[in-house]
Image (cartoon, rainbow, N blue to C red; front, side):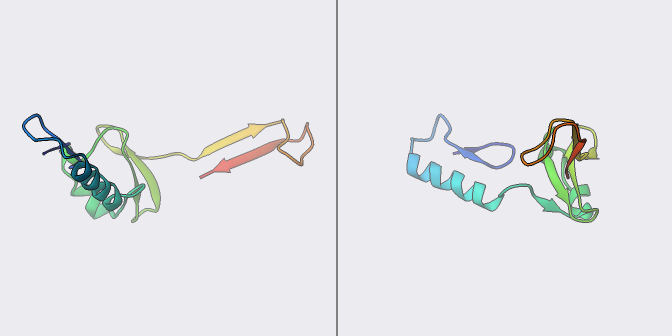
Length: 102
């Protein structure tokens, strides 16, 4: 069985198909790496170039920031702020509504 650069298993051409075993191996990998990983700055600095994929998002436990890999550097993910004059449910049109999503 082959693996992706992140270690996810997939059957190779020379491997007979064993779908239940392949699915179990994939499920075990997904279970081992749920959601967004939380890493310290030391762990982030120790990542090899092969372990980083452009667009990968992590939680930096040292700085308490979400960060993404640009292909050259880790950058903080900016919060999303939406400003609208359209009222959310229960509000009145014409007021200014600010939604902050960290």
